[in-house]
Length: 84
Ligand SMILES: [Zn+2]
Image (cartoon, rainbow, N blue to C red):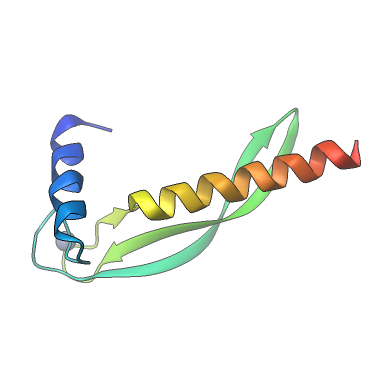
């Protein structure tokens, strides 16, 4: 992540709102897509949360969404481990 975007995200987090940190006008609309990630030579498909700005169309993963995405990937990996 580049430093400017990180700064925007910090400001945005402090504001605790859903205004786009890029254009500072649009509203962020949460959405979920599926993302493929590689783990131990296998491809895992997990739900991946992100938000899209209604004005500039920027796709942003909020820190909260990033945490929840990470948790979901770990969950999926743990399940694979148990099956093996
Ligand atoms: Zn925007």
